[in-house]
Length: 454
Image (tube, rainbow, N blue to C red):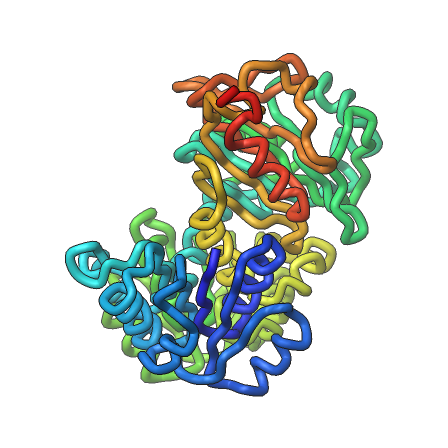
């Protein structure tokens, strides 16, 4: 597949990296020649300096041959125009745009086939807000991912020393836990482990576990997590992410305060929010946090554009008595540090954006792809085809790539946590976890059997 990626920032770089490693022909466009030079030193792709909204630059990139345009610059206007050119001048089949303006995000009709004809619009900030809401709803989890229309969750959390199964292997965990759950992977010392029944659960392990949505809180409680529901939330930062998060919290009748350094932005927020208290000040100020009774907050959520400030604010808030702290982070390098230093969860807009885009490029009946653990692995949801190697025989007889595990199956309205003798049927929704390096092999398994046409 030939794809044009516009924007060489974090999102554009990672999309280009993933697509090129999977054998696709990628052209990356960006105005910043120094940034493109750095890309060329790391990736085996073609780069073109210039504006992604320029017809001349897009023609130079041979847009008429492209099967996909992914416009992920920091400018909504550039992204929209690039997709518009792709539609009107070359009929590119798939067009994806990052749209960050909340008001545009609330008007999806203009992006439809009758108008701009953009196949997928992604608002990274709204994706981050969705993740924050899930973490607040499922207190005790550090990550919560939805599959099978919300019927199945993949939750992640660190193992505490007091956890009842610390020191037990997974077979013993299954015997002790009165319910169905499957441990899909474990991050240990920053290395991803695909477990077996003999794998021992250790303190400070970071676990990914599949469980039916209705049983999430039971599982978290079993692992010793406090699942008390939030009543008060304190938000540090007053940008679009804070605004969208406060709007969602107001819908849930959760008392919310926002602290923002810019006086004019505080006034704007006060005018757009009904119940939220907007404070002018520094969210990393101990005096301000104490004055506002931070010790009564169920969650402190740091969503400024400064990742270091978010981490500092979250740690300070917890030290002063906030029950839990979340922070917005774009750098994957920081992710593995979060559970170690005591922060309860992370919203990563870039990772969420990459995950949304990936499902457009996967073969077979793939519904979604979600990066896990510093993006070394993915959780993939797909619909089992009659023609696939995965259907019609017990899982233990299927030769999966190393590091692959089937985590859950949705069959009509029934959630199945699979065993070795489980048989996948055509039409089942199946969720698996696999190493990113194994994705091409997984795609072959999910499509057509070699003997299907014989």
